[in-house]
Image (cartoon, rainbow, N blue to C red):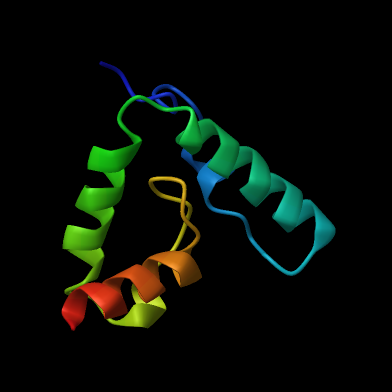
Length: 80
């Protein structure tokens, strides 16, 4: 299996701003790519494994179909 994002520009998954209309559209597009990806779950698991050891301020980009803020919520739940 191959990731749907393989070969794509990684900047597509790192919106500059999630507040702007353009940033929200970019994030929605990236999330749609992730949610259709056959390796979404392993990708998300990998992101959570790495990021749970990092300060929350270092969690960036869309990974496994989740925004940084969404992954932080998952990590907090996981830590309980």
